[in-house]
View 1: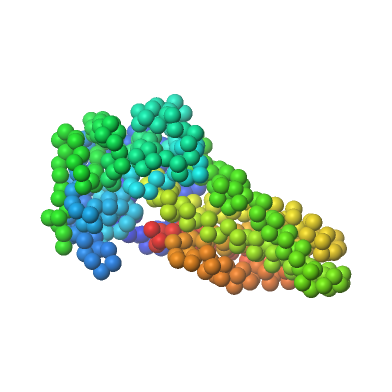
View 2: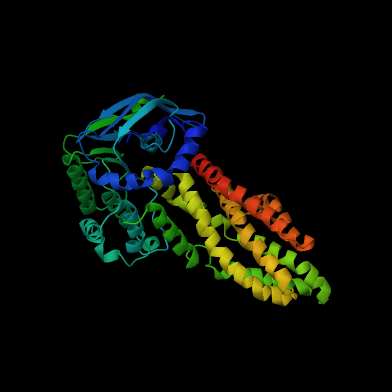
Length: 235
Length: 218
């Protein structure tokens, strides 16, 4: 399920077809069922000669990477160097200024935006994504327990602390069962114990044949993880 | 497991109807009734004048009530990153916008058509006129909902987007209003058919225009 949208919108007809075909082809259905079997040998994430421009500024150029199942990469660099932009380009949510992205496997993204309704209790907000991802109720509770959120299901999302929100986002990611994890500053706001949990989850994900790409300015303990310094590609 | 789009519709409806985001169904309906009640105070209690202008007043009130929740239709989900997460799951922006049109329509139109009954009584409309108003609203409100969602998508993320959205919707709603309210003056149902046609065009365009706007605003 290679995503054709990574290099732009593919013209108005592709766009129109995409919109028209969803109820017929069951493409939506497939996307939500795919993650359970997404980790596997076909999974990969690659980019070649990527460049990213924001406004008038070229952030980086000539960036290439290739990740195979079980591999992890930390993108390092100072604030504003383009870590988050790189993640959005790799996810297909932004078009690169130059270069191509190739990915096979579902993408799971964690960034500073939670996608959880602030007014809803945490349990209900996560249950919506669980329904979309086809997660059973016990699997959702297991994920919540793994992240230490099981006591907080009745608390509205807006009352959660920064770290608790981060963990809620991770619970959504776990339910998605995506093969490729793109984590933007996953440790921000987490205490040491929670950091260890996240590192363990990432290790488990890679051990299961998944791919992890982590943008972080702080160290992330994960065995066998490569580090890519964005400063080397800064334009 | 339910279909993802049904799950999204359920979420949209629960957020809109319960008032989590829009003040629920009650607010637009109260607003609608308030406009209908204020009108006789403004133009005087002459029954003939009220009966003649009443249908048009109901239409304008319906348009205003449909505009009320515009700023909360698309923007919160863009801010929250929901559209990103949907896109990653292969659910296109067009599909989400289409679902949102349905949810927006369900959240204001049926209640509004019910409220048009007491409003018609307040304005002294006779049975035939009220029937035309109700038919016209049934034909025209889907177009108003589609237009509202499209404009909400276009103005999401803009500074002062709310005021701009209202300004943009009003001229674009003119075809629906002309045919819908115009059917009252002409006293025929052909106007309603034309209102329905304008409505259908708006409904058909909304997912594409709205979806493209959401992607461009990302």
